[in-house]
Length: 552
Image 1: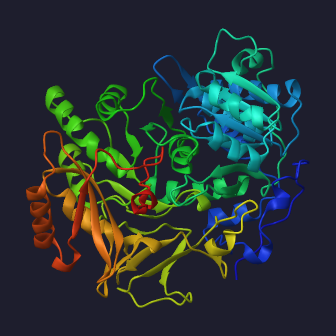
Image 2: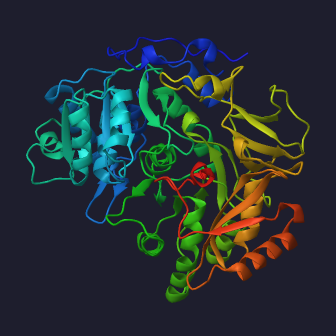
């Protein structure tokens, strides 16, 4: 049986989040079965930022570059000093009490990273939000998380101020990225000492609330402790990614999204590597240029972006007479079609690392291992985690059967004050909501979201398989497949296609695409309805919002 982590003295005197955690019987069973995880299990007091940043200096990384941008670079030693100054602002200048929530609003930048690290080092709870959220969406988060302070990029103040007017619990907004404002976070930090002790948090004290991206409705607040995030570092990053101190990391997922927070801040710090934050919005062409110019070696983004990026990578390699310095490319956030994996391999020579994770479990728990790619498979379970394919009653199915994915490990779902906890955690297992097949060798093959499996005339059809077939057609840039209610078949397969420039979506193309799918996979899986769109509905993190396609 999994052991209960060691209890310790909590430093978080504000108990708002603690008192809204699920009851023990609704919580996941946590498993600490790797040696490095057992040490974390026994930890009493633990501060995430102290472990990752303060101790980086003890490892000899003080002069290693940690944060990069076109305007400035910060070493680990310099970043530690800047974080500590900001801790001083939070602790002494603003008088915040450990456990209080701090909303962070900004794009991926050095200032956003420093602010996030300072909040967590001070024993506060970081509530990062996507830059494109509007006042109503911000208001919903404020109403649930009850932050007393917001740290906000100066260019994004307007919507937050509108939300604040309706939610006075948010008493103070401090801008950053505004050098001319004497009340900005950077200006206030300059008046503080460059060294302070971390908050003596318990390992189970709360480090962050991550609001889900809302692909299936209203966002939920997933809770992660200091121990949870460090446990995640000891699994996929240590055993699969294996980043090095000389790596330069870049990518598109926002720091407000767990995929981005892990990939573009926490995991590079765990390895002593550096992260590059651009000062321009990412486009495929701009990202390719930055990859070449910075010498980036690790990239994180979603499959759709890799597909758009591939031709620009190939073009630059031809112009410069050599490929980029990339050595690891990580894809997550949505299913990775084989067509996209092959396109990227042709353009860069790199086998993409596919993975599936969850906001609720912080990061990736099933992943491709470099050099062990199997066609169509996401990969194998990450060391430290345990996964199985089960039926509706939670019984493990024979290999080769389609069923629900169930996962256990050192992290697990804990929603703050949300009845949907009962759906995600059952009998100690986490159910991310995905349908999978596991083969005899332990490779997992994604089929669909569990509620997106298309059952047509008695056949099970996984949307990703049909999407992959469509993406192999030269006319298709992007596509999404859903099940549409049908009186005769129960459901019929419907595709939404975004076409490449200059291609006309007419009846002849519909027929051509249908014939193409019939020739590629079992004919009963072909889309009987095809609709052409200018773009697909996606969240800010790039996840496809299928529920919007299902709306009449």
